[in-house]
Every structure is written in C-alpha cells, then in structure tokens.
Length: 264
Length: 177
Image (cartoon, rainbow over all chains, first blue to last red; front, side, top):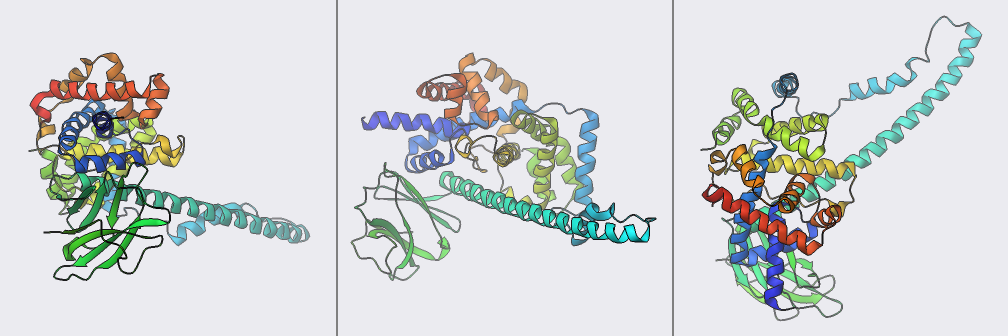
C-alpha cells in the first residue's frame, strides 16, 4: 500500500476521531498522526467543530416536575456542601444493624429466647459475614472503577495536550516532541522496528546541564507508532533524547541516541 | 461571549446564584445528551446531577473556550463512563473519551442553535446522517457501527468523513476556527 493511500486512510480515521467513535488504542494512534501532520490537524479541527455542534441537537425540553426535582436535589447537595462525602461510619453501622434487628423481638419465653438468641447470633454472624463479603466486593469494584476512571482521565489529558493549539511542538526523527504546560510527550508515527530484546528508552537533561537521566522505556506498535508521556516536570527539562537499549532500560545510554532535542 | 463562560467565572468564586443560573441554562442540554446516550430518563437525571456537581466541586476543570462545547464533552465522556461501568459492551466497543479542550472559539456555540444544526444534519443523505448520529450519541465504535448497519468498515469511514465535511460546509463559518 502506497504512502498516499495510507495517508488517506489515516485522514478518514481523523474524521472518526473527531466524531469520537475510535476505540482507545486507535484514538492514540490517530492523535500521534494528528500531532505530526499539519493537514491532519486542520482537518481534525474542522471536523471536530462539526461534530461538537451535534450536541446541540440533543437539547430537549425537560418536563417541569422532573426539572424541579433535579434542581432541588442538586441545589440541596450544593448548599449543604456535602458533595461526594463518603458514607459515614454511623451510616454504615445503621445499615449493618438492619439485618439482625428483626431477630431481637421481645415477649418470648425465657427458654425459647435462649435458643432463639443462639440461632439469632449465628444468623447475625452469617449476615455480617455476607455483608463483609459484599462490602469487600463493592470495594474491589469501586477500586476497579476508580482505576478505569484514572486511565480514562489520563487518556483524556494526553489527547487534549497532543492536539492543543497552544502546545509547543519540536520535530524529531520519526515524530514530534509535544510540550504543554508542565507535561512532555513523544508522539512517534514511524519509529524503526526494534531488534529482539531491545526497547526504546527516553532520556531527559535538566535545564543548563548536559547530564542525562534515564526515563521510561517503550515499544512502538508494528506500524512504528507510539505515544509516550514522560513522568517529568517539563519546566525543569532542557533537552530530551531517545536511544535503543536492552529490555528493562539502562542507567546511561549504551547506543548513539536516535535523537537529542533541546526544548528551546 | 458564551454566557456560560461568564457564569463559570463566578462559580469559581463559589457563587451559588451563578451556579443556579448555569444549571437553568444548560441542564436541558446535559439531560438530553444523557437521554440520547443512556436511553432512560432516570440515568439521564443521574448523569445531569453528576456533571453539575463536578462543575461545582471542580470548576477549574473548565479552562476556557466554549462552555457549551466543554459541558457537552463532559456529559458525553461521563455517559461513556456509565456505559463502561454497566459493562454491557466489551471495553473495545466503547470509544475513547473526547479531549475536553477543543477546536472552537469562545463564541462559536453561542452563534449556533439547535434548529440550525438539525437543519444541517437533515440535509445529509440518510446513510451519512444515521452513522453520524449513532456514532456521536450511541457510545459505540466505528466497528460496531459497521456491524449494526451491516456496512463495510471502509464505507462507514468514508460516509462519516463526507457527512462531517458536509455538516461543516452547511454550518459555514459558524464552526470555523
């Protein structure tokens, strides 16, 4: 397939990205392409404008009762400033007490009460055990959801930064270094394939220094595409570099860097 | 200027009145996006609550630009979160979130109205319009669009690109950068 056909296919993907119908992995690839191609960026901005406008068609009248209820519910939360407050221990204890409460009736004969109490305690323990299991499961699910939201939030920020008009872009071999605020990204669209057992490794040099510090390692996809966020404060970095290193990375570059790029 | 932008400046100072005005002005849009994407009023109501609480608790998340465009993306992204959490679709069938900062100038959305966009959308050939609407509000990927409409993937891509280009032409400079 020729480069021009490939490019046309990527531009079609830009439209899909603007509409928001690309899965996460493909979206990252297109973001890397857009970050490296001025025409693609213009196309994205144009089509994104048209796609954003679609939101207007969703606006619909909300019936007055629902609207009033929604507003009351929201404003109560806002006014009480109880936004996102975790469930209190007292609330949880009350919830736990719901299960055994019916077991503690009065008016039973003393002997029966003893037997019943034994059964009740056993059931109480059982219910508490079930509740604890359910709470653990809920905790696990909540942690998974929080992790998923963190990943989504990171993706969202990366894509926003890569496409932001106010980002600084530095062309390098096979891609672009994108700097926005305190964040640095590599957006590669055609990195050469790696020999077996090797990875690419990023390096950073502080401002005013030529001494490089090791950063993340990464492997591009089969098309040579990679989007990499460097875990470093961009405001303190004077230059970045990439070299090919053994898996696991190196403490200092062991090969001639693929590029060294001052961020000035 | 988008009136939402001015209201957000006041919301940052914890002005409840401004927040209430913001809600009055934009809850129909957020609710509508929720309804279109999640399919039931109760979920749309929860989504509206979540989005506006987020605005109140983290107003700095809005970094300027068009408020309407921003809140639309927040609502759409949140709806995608809900679809993910429901796990009705496999992860790969949920599209990536949209970046929250975008292409539009401050007042572009203020110059647009729903009827004008609906008219532009209505002028598209049905096969383009259907894919674009299903894609934007359906919370599904292009592969899923191809499956649902029994259309080759390449055709889906071409139709979406052509449709968005026509939309842009129809809306003219209203969506220019």
